[in-house]
Image (cartoon, rainbow, N blue to C red; front, side, top):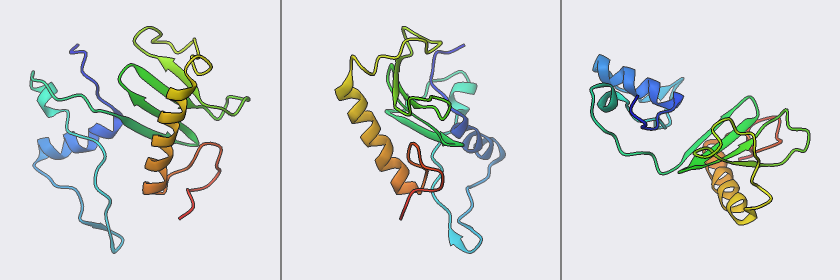
Length: 133
């Protein structure tokens, strides 16, 4: 265990690096978006890799942004339909929502998430389809 941060988005760049491949230039006749992840190869070879400054992800309407120790989460199963904030260094199991104690941080991270989502045409929290163009 290295303690370094990796994410599922890093798997494709890692496989491409080990295979000597490159990302597709286009998909279905359209320019392919750049890969969001970064290769884990340096870590797997026993080295270091700079930690990402910020991570964003969305899957099936669930959204999250992570910066440092903070993870902001929008869970579609959350009946309150609001962002939840966790200090994942102190609360790895995400049991203590700290959004009410840190409203400025929630606002900052949620705004960053929404910019990312709009730029990539991803879902916004609570939205059923893709972000509006």
